[in-house]
Image 1 (tube, rainbow, N blue to C red):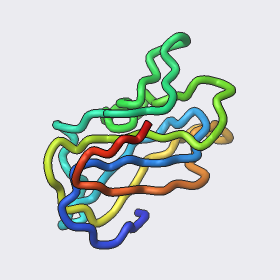
Image 2: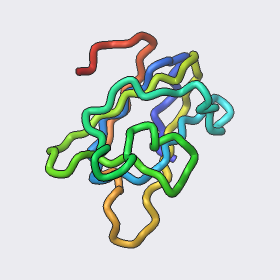
Image 3: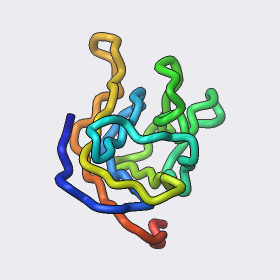
Image 4: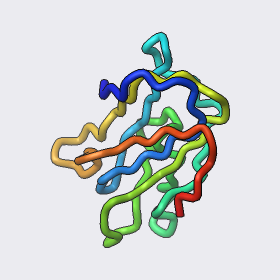
Length: 124
């Protein structure tokens, strides 16, 4: 688990990442330390999504399918950004991700920043 401290009631979670072909699942932790529901989550912005070579859209980071993943278009430079609307106010206490499991495979987050906002900002 990567702690982001005690952050109260946030609605929009834009995640700025340095990722190469990210195959991972995102978990946002609530006040009880457990993953919050993803039912109302939606991607409101992703700087790059590979859709010509397959279905690698950004919503794959929270679809609960370990076999699917978000992939950015090849040769697009870092950093990459995804903005996720949690759909409702959540008390957030942490962040975890499940990285790609294949040895030597791309998809590890090298560096990341998480910004928490209660209102939508212009991320483009």
